[in-house]
Image (cartoon, rainbow, N blue to C red; front, side, top):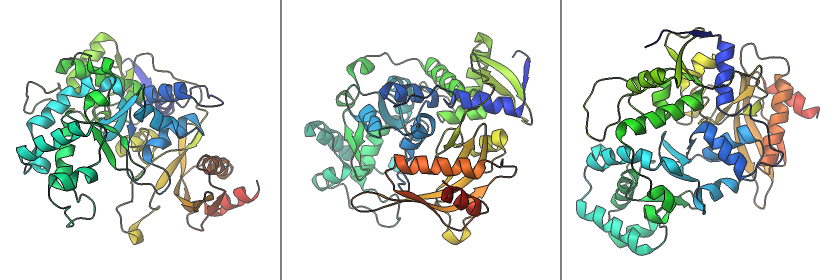
Length: 419
């Protein structure tokens, strides 16, 4: 591998990373489908999560980069022709550009080959019946609609979360293996399954499946361009790939990310760099921007690519971040659904937010707690107040209410009162 040729300060690394994520793109007065497409080119994927205390997770990274936008843009991109996005296990459950479907074929193949503990007890007959029922339906269907017809077993009530019937598990197995695709979701967030040929554009299905090495190169290069600057582990995490050399190889297995990185360095697509304070070798994507400043003042989802890898958030922003949704309420440090506040190139605060909606429309954006980071600049309360008002308006909420918890709450309350 060529020696490191450049050293980046932590500030420079942050600016490269944030520019790669789209925070320096010129804003559009009214975001359009073209704006959304450009934004997803930056983020690579949009992580999907069921928690809806504020807004579904996949809507928020678009807001963070595009500003207030018509929320119908996303279901149009993911559920209507010409479909631009489709759900798959790309990072975790995520919306990804449709052109990545054949790139994921090797991952799909491995899921089909190995059922693991989750699908190990599924009967082949049930899987075949589920596939046939979806094909015969002629339109997208939910697990709830199929279960009475399939007799795939009652939903297991032993656990509050993954209480899936056998039919639901079979649908999931077929989806992970690429034999079914997700056509969208209902208003209750239930998955709608259908055949891939009824979901994906014909031109996407006609694309050849790339060899494993080429697929791995595509994903690592996309991860590098979305990160701007990253370690091998960061790059592997982006599309949940194997980073280290060694392990059992199969014909469909992609090479480890460490090998792909070496090849991309040799090709000039990645440049080895040293980042101030990092003990790991870093790599900068060729052509990545280093802006003089980042004009950001926005809240980030807990599942935003900037912070979803918690160790990277600590290395890059000195921001120790843990999601506390599954922590008992009396043991939470910052709150249930906590969003970091990005001001310029730094994460300067965090707020626990809830959309308290009223029947018929309106409601309040509740700030359950507000916390400043060490060294947060003096303009933080005013900037955060403006951002909270902007988010409330985007969510069609009438006002912002700050509850008296957290060291930033008093100043934030005063800033909101002084509007």
